[in-house]
Length: 307
Ligand SMILES: [Fe+2]
Image 1 (cartoon, rainbow, N blue to C red):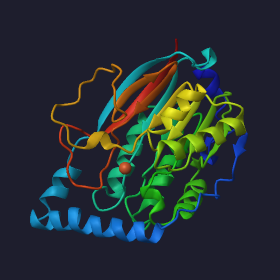
Image 2 (cartoon, protein in one colour; image 1 turned 45 degrees about the vertical axis):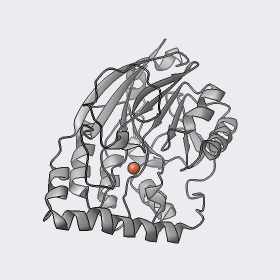
Image 3 (tube, protein in one colour; image 1 turned 135 degrees about the vertical axis):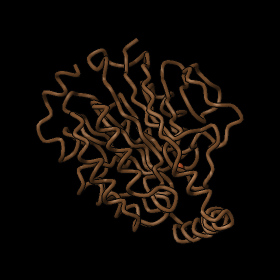
């Protein structure tokens, strides 16, 4: 199947190929109280990041940026995964938070690492930017669009992506060849149906969005959602695989994360199962607070196996 998918790759730089279902990409759901959220986020950033960093004479951000990005390869046995997509390799990245703590240069280096891993598909589950769009994110999106994965690069927005101008970010991604799924789905050239939902805060909001996408497409094989709470609705509908970020793994962990992929109880990081549906939550790459302890940034390549 992978060879077939690669063979179909002819002009993926223009974004994932296939027929879309749902809303137009530009129709990012308007967010109520965006301005106040943006201002609150800026104040929080000033107090918790800028001030804390100044007090340590830049030590916090220097140490933060010096962390190595781990590359993890995981093979997932997925009960409902269609057999024709057995062996599909998905590079899952999330939560760059390009800005003060994540320079665009560092983010582009990460994307180049993803490119070198030669995945079939790149899935970015949001929070590309930390605050504003004037952070070099255009270069990061250009790199994402140029990865050259046979099935392209897909993106869903996170809560931070909406702080400044979510609509503009979607347009920038589209121009760079990265398809953003805003409560919509796309059927890729290999036949894989991928749905993506916009940022939703609660289980209820996420479930509504997931249901909308599911009905519009007549079912999806893979769901991208920034908030792992989307898994509740996804599992109810029987979505085989959901990919999420948002939690940063809590950023501070008492114990170093183990590499096992046993099913865990809380939707914080790692692999979860509900009935025959699987969720993977990455700890992501960046942060909005300059501290990650026992929670290194990561790029994950998932090989999806039919069970
Ligand atoms: Fe985030």
